[in-house]
Image 1 (spheres, rainbow, N blue to C red):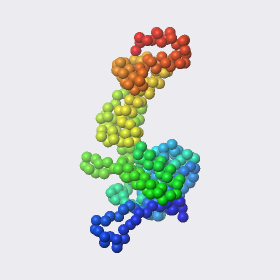
Image 2 (cartoon, rainbow, N blue to C red):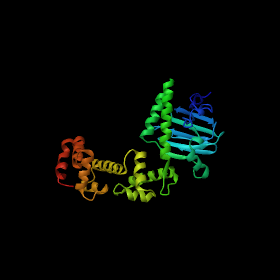
Image 3 (tube, rainbow, N blue to C red):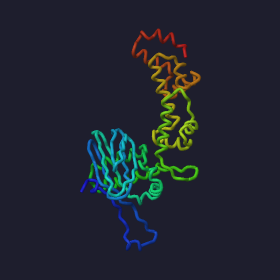
Image 4 (cartoon, one colour):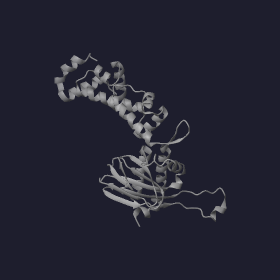
Length: 314
């Protein structure tokens, strides 16, 4: 028996006799299989059920390759994927980095009823699975699962069950959104749109993007963009824009080849005074103070003439 089989989780199912206790009694839980993979290894199995394989790669892990039947996948650090598997499908994963940490969960299809119906109705659409990005909540639960997995107590197993359900529930919540027609749509395409928004911001920090313009450019709405950008990147769209602009400004100032007015223009500020105010709010010091501190630290008294000559310049 494999380690994953030993640690298979199965809830207490009510028998037919017990169902006579009350018509309001419901089945609690489901059958799930899971395993934790660490380091450099190759792992494979044949699926004992029709269901969904949920594979989660912890942050700070390297890329990992997996194959299900003839389909190949490449997962990066912090990515999660949910893939349909038929009973008897062969799964093969290659982990080539000693720092890799990966969680695999296998859940029966009848416990993902709403999504499973959507999958059966449009299998081509979901052929390559659904990809999401781990947020803080998932990352924390994964860390706790890995820590608890080291022990072998009954209490640890109960806690692992709780965290596994939390991970699945949180992913299921983020795998669906409703469009204007109240139709359930997959999240993978929207994740790619969120990535595109980030790319648009990073490519030209002299532009002042609005959320409405960014949402329109990638074909989504403001509410979805704000919600899921924060989910994937841990900060709001506007906070991310500000952070990128200020860090870019800091680099330009320390290079020493630009006046403050130039730096302001290169980071999208029409007026140097507005830039100075934003810079001070972000770093706690004005731009010139940063420049002077850097010069004195690296050039000492030799920098004083340059400081005096530029003290009135923007």
